[in-house]
Amino acid sequence: MTDPVDVLIVGAGASGAAVAWSLAETRMRIVCLEQGDWMNPAEYPSSGRDWEARAFSDMSISPNRRKRETDYPVNDANSPISVANFNAVGGSTILYAGHFPRFHPSDFRVKTLDGVADDWPIDYRMLEPYYAENDRMMGVSGLAGDPAYPPKESVMPPVPLGRAGTAIAKGFNKLGWHWWPSDTAIATETYDGRDRCINLGACSSGCAQGAKASTDITYWPHAVRAGVEVRTRCRVREITVNGDGRAFSGGARGGTPRMNRASGVVYYDQDGVEQFQPAEVVIVACNGVGTPRLLLNSTSGRFPNGIANSSGLVGKNLMFHPYASIQGIFDEPLDGYRGPGVCIWSQEFYETDPSRGFVRGYTYEINRGRGPVATALAGMFSGRIPFGEGHHEAYRQLFSRIAGMVGICEDLPEEHNTVTLDPELTDGHGIPAPKVDYTLSENSRRMLDHAVARATEVLTAAGAKDVITEAPIGVGGWHLMGTARMGTNPERSVVNEWGRAHDVKNLFIVDGSIFVTSAGVNPTRTIQALALYIADSMKKRLANLFD
Image (cartoon, rainbow, N blue to C red):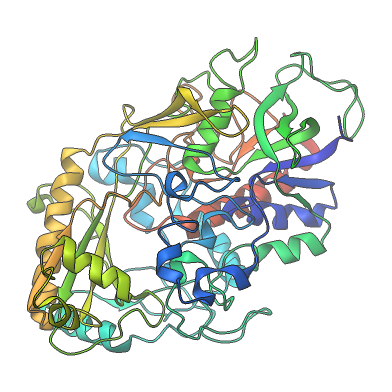
């Protein structure tokens, strides 16, 4: 057993980094356990010619394809959408594209507005200052004045539209539909020790330039300088509670342990040796699949069905964002893969319109283009590039001429969409792997169909001569939400309105698992704003944190 700490954070990704940095000013002893490594940007695919091949192998978005030592397998055979994640200091921000939208005010009130799901116990106004704080820490590029949002400022100018963004924007203009330069977590100017984007174009397999705001180069350097300790290659097996045989005598601040409090965690260190780390406060930041996996594996006499699970909702209400891909083929050369992958967005179809046949809506994220290998694969799989005669000419008609968008569709919470513990599959330390059971709802299917149809109109108006579509994208499980939801009623939620578990007064959750609804935008910016909000709520209550 190691010496007790005041705060123990499990997970060093988007939310773990933010909460660690915010709490560091308290001068408490804070330790973060991360099962992955610190990454070396010089070894990212974008530093070599094999960058596309490595995006399908050791730097794939899928842990089942990567199979790095630091990964854990995921059984998602019973889901049309496969899980995407990454284990490292920085977590999945290492591989995300840097597309960085906020939720809308309506996203916190879907029950009130549309009669579906549940309202959040907090609202946009409460998160607004934390959005702004996170924007400063991550370094957000964008353009103020987007009519789809309440007023918000950007830290840096937007990424260039380029040929692809300009061409597709003209299509939106012809139809009279909303578009705006995207908010991106990619530096367009030198910022906080990071250099600006130089258009390497391989954003989704790690930014060797350091322009993309992964938390290993944004939050963590500040947190470490402030005294937070990060231990890598530490795989947490379970959270323990006082009275289960592992409770420590006293605590980081002395006194007698109280029942039904988390006492710490059991983990395997870099040598595979089992360790116990006692803590006064445990914060879980493992994402919408990793967090329920850990909670469900943390059983005891007090919590036979998993810690903090008296509601029975841990692992239920899993939400992805079903993605539709709509790509146009143009006559004129565009940008290809060069430049940040995302340049503009459209939220023309974001809010509910009953005439469309579904509730809620989606965002169009406009993509710049594809690399040489991805172009060839898309052409051959779609039948547009033949084998044999005409192969090279057909390829030339596609390379640097494909651009389009994805539709990010809001996913409604449904209890039958779950993360459970697989009875057979385990990771390298014998810990049960997560098992995903997910069904695409009829509402999502109608939304995907609508997104494909309207995007086809846009691309046609923009001058595309042909359109390639896929819906849903099978490998599109980037966003993992809802499996330990927030709420004021302990029977219908796992954590309260400021992230504390209803059942365990010194256990907090700060990642996407606490989402009540998914919205129609990427979640990272909101995950981090929530983490900062929860950290601030903890700091304001330090004198009576466990009351």
